[in-house]
Amino acid sequence: MALPMCCSAQRYGISRLVRGFKNSYFPSVDMKPKLPPRLTAVSGGVIRRHWQRLLRIRERLRFSEETIHLFFAGTVGVLGGVTNFIFVSSVEWLKTFSLGSSGDLVDVAYGLLEWQRLLIPALGGIGAGLVLYWGLRLAGPQGASNVLEVVVAGDGRLRMRSALVKAVSSLLTIVSGASIGREGSITQLTATFASRLGQGVGWEPYRLRLLVACGAASGLAAAYNAPVAGAVFAAQIVLGSFSMTHFAPVVFASVIATMVSRFFFGIAPLYRVIAFEDPSLGQLPLFLLLGILSGGLGAVFLKMLQFCEERFARLNLMIYDRLGLGGLLVGCIAIYVPEVWGNGYGVTNKILMEEFLEIPSPILFMAALLLAKLLATVVSVGSGAVGGVFTPTLFLGAALGSLFGTVAHQLGWAGNIHVGAFALVGMGSILSATVHSPLLAVILVFEISLNYSLMPPLMLACAVSTVIARRLHPDSIYTEPLRRKGVDMDRDIDGAGAAMSKTVGDLMRTPSPPLRETATFREIADQFLRSPNNFFLVVDAENRFLGIIALHDLKEYLNAGQELNSVIAFDVMRPPPRCLTPNQRLLEALPILMASELRNVPVVNNVREFRLVGSVARAEALGLLSAAIATPKPTGV
Image (cartoon, rainbow, N blue to C red; front, side):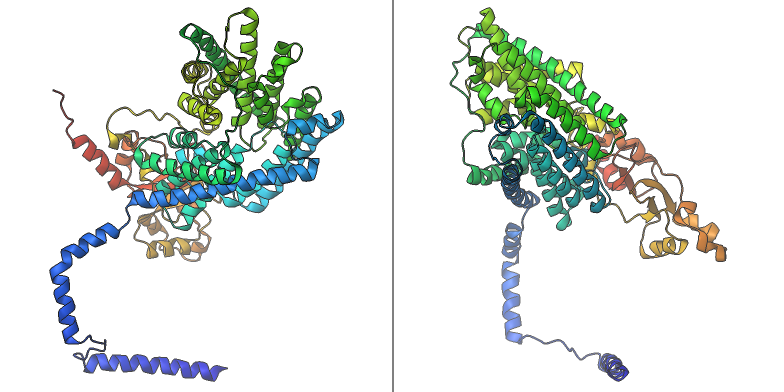
């Protein structure tokens, strides 16, 4: 076997010698093939005469960044529609397989015995918890999985394995009757697919965050057949910006996702609503009062969620025990009120169609239904179940509106206003109180009902409920988990101009490969030899930023002998400098940028976890700020 290798090496060496001999002794000989002189002259003349036209053609054929964003947004939209179809089909199949029926979960609950209503949610919670416990361990290191977190305080990277594990857990939770919605998992899955698509083509963090927002928009739009609401959700809640650079891709993704979803499920509205007459001016105070009550209930709902999450966390139980306990509590409620099973879609439709008004004591029944659903939702979410809260929140709003409308009719205040009209307005006002977005609530309720006659009272109630809820509970259901991690969610623009309103996340890039804290001295030296950087960041196994190593920090170790073998990065590094966070405005980051001696200033997700997510070129950021300060403001006439 050695002879062929030897001959090959000899041939390789001889060929190199021959090439060197030719280049040394015959330097004027051109070994490249030549075109015929006539053809060369003709092509050269054509190029000289038409070079400007050729340049213009090249510019027209070159795709702009906005075009590329729209193309990928459309791809994400297709993924959103298909993901919605697969997830909904999986829920129906698993429901048929485990419960023997594919109908609404409330109808299934009525056909079960009391002990079955008690145990099925508990067993489903244990199964969902076991999937999370073992699945996340097998999935490997966990990064940020909250869609809003990776956009506001991250690099837009979502882990596929974690998302798939949580989707399977959510399937078990939903099918077993927990008071949780499926829209949360659909949105999470689509956003993860979008993030992985961007990572696959090597996109920078600012583009990844836009793709994640497109995924969130298409997931919500497909789940509710509501393209405008999906786009508004992504722009206002996820991105915090309605600029056309951001808004056009999320609109495109929402529309494509909705059309794909309609191909599978049709164009019918999600909720059935009876015909309403337009309310008069004198009846608007009733909706104003409903908005005040909705704001109060929304704040109570958020406080109960926070309280329940903290109590479950203090129990120090394993995740499967917590979810099993949460399911058991839901089962206890379902023994007496089976309507709490599932996300409440079917019951909400019955409330809107005023079917519960025919039973004896509708006021007591609706009050009990409202309280039971509130407790079931709080327990399900607080125990750690994976899913959405949009649909259960709409249930609570419909129940509150129906209760309010029934009482108003009993007192003779409602006139000719249908109870279903109060229920529909209650859906929007409760949703607005929990997400702190009247615009999103108004548009979503309109799109899922296709009823325009109640828009003025709906807008009034949503605006009032948001003001009341923010007064009683400053954080929304999306921003509160981030506040606990130390992420500042204040996105108000101070009017200092477009450059001043940019965030660190808008300029953030992928950081240079950091060193592990256990890297040996030889590995550190090799890293400096291969890179033009004078500084390297040091992180631990969970990517937490621990410190930096400068090139001249290695000087004191150059005269060392064998003891260099025991020196690691942790011994050499300095403490970490002041860092940026993705949601900081550039003007707020100016002191850190000015004081830093690094060309690329590190960016961490938040000041508590201190996980390295990117870096910002100091010269680029300072250049933007200098240009904004130097630009004269136009004077008014």
